[in-house]
Image 1: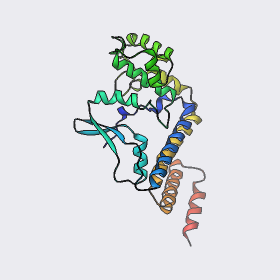
Image 2: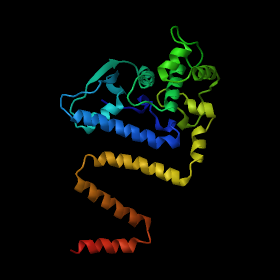
Image 3: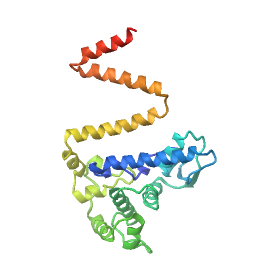
Image 4: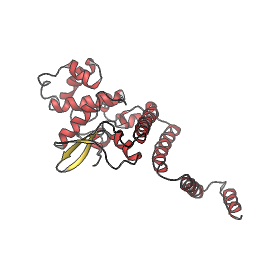
Length: 258
């Protein structure tokens, strides 16, 4: 069973920078809570993951957080509902199911983009009307967005030329520009980055690295973690050519003389 970026509508790049730390923290807390539930008893199970069988390859469509919780709880088996479908169907289904009744709600910007990509798919990118049985109200309800937003998207779809956007503007599953970029104009992502100062970007990158390190540390003993961090600290000081390098080397050698 594999994961694929095309099937993960909770794209962090869709979240405004000011909200990213909060969203990532809630995501970690959600996984941590489910892990505790699983570790409370071997017979305890979470809702089954939705998995797509695409030409014999099993890809997670819904349940990425649950998958992380099962892995952190060191469970050898994970309950799944497997459905045979095409990759394009799996991509669109992932947009829909992740915006449903979930314990961890998607950020508003993520929900809007999921709705935008879904509308593009069911209307052939604006070439057709909404299918029978679907309306502004039902679309708004499915994705948790306003009817006016749905109306605006439907009006915008026929005007969008999918060619000529920067690589970061496309949804990896649909190959269609993201709603945020269409709304803001070409280069929206780059414009947003230009508004972030160096300190904010450094802090953002540090938070991402800390998250990855925490995942690895969770699988190691405290002593292994301590030694690994010490090794990284020594290497960082050496490479940086810090003015404190000699003092650091002296303190290190002093500590090993005993």
